[in-house]
Amino acid sequence: DGWVLPERERTAFAAGNYHRVPLMIGAVEYEGAFFIRNIPIKDVVGFRTFVQAGFGKWAEEAMTLYPAPSDAEVPNAVALLLGDFMVHWSNRALSRLHAKHGQPAYRYIFTHPTGGDTEPPTHVEDVPYIFGALDQSYFGRERTIIDKDRALSDQMGRLWVRFAATGDPNGGGVTWPAYDAAQDNYLVLDDSFAPAAGWRAEHLDFLEQVLATG
Image 1 (spheres, rainbow, N blue to C red):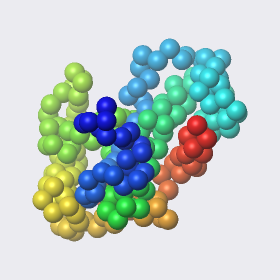
Image 2 (tube, helix red, strand yellow; image 1 turned 120 degrees about the horizontal axis):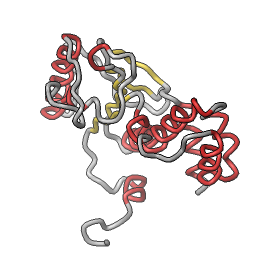
Image 3 (cartoon, rainbow, N blue to C red; image 1 turned 180 degrees about the vertical axis):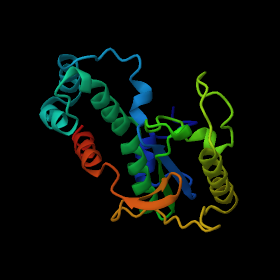
Image 4 (spheres, helix red, strand yellow; image 1 turned 30 degrees about the horizontal axis):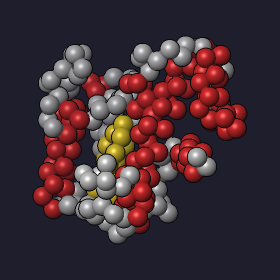
């Protein structure tokens, strides 16, 4: 509006016109599964129509990167596409911009399935761990909580408190390097913490190319 927001957020971030403070940013492994419950894309024809409308000349490459050769595989393809487009791409882009402007960005990917579940976590399932709220219902769904969940929640809580207090989550036996665009690094949050790099890089590079062309 030119007053509260003097310029568009993308323009501001690109130019470095924002408060440059240490950043912690991350996502969960299977972000998009949260968003597909009410999306009316149920078969290959519907998915191809959706991709064609959204990607235009890039549609065939998108279908290669997000394949759905059968109707049964469409929900997973939609989930991966939405997760990458809505969350993972922007997280990486913000991490890159923040590093470019001289501030540390601590990026994470949360991969821990609650209660020993076999399904990977989806959108915001990291939040109860951060705030020590595992015993609360998750969008009305009760979950089984086991000792590994509580141990991870305790560890994550300490990381977040340390970051809030100092601007740096490192310490207490945890090594978490700040984001480096050349390495495309992040920290995996699971039963143990581990450094990794290149999260879905091929897919995010493709989306970067598509978005750069308008």
